[in-house]
Length: 55
Image (tube, rainbow, N blue to C red; front, side, top):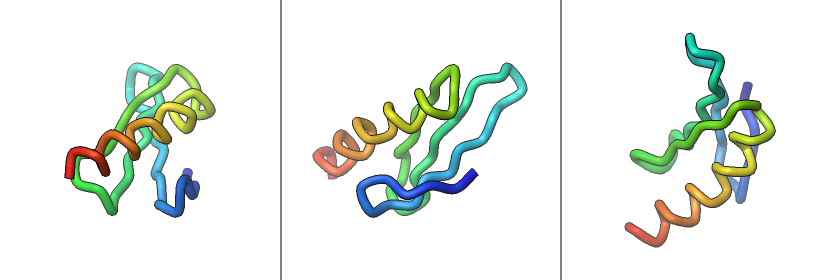
């Protein structure tokens, strides 16, 4: 699945354990996970903020 969050493209994929991984391709090392796609999308907003602050 492909979404937009805070102006960034977010890719969400389900892994072999059933967890959803949200990755922001435009920000190196920016990703998070959740038990549902919705939870991963909520968490990715915080991950984007943390990754941008670290740069």
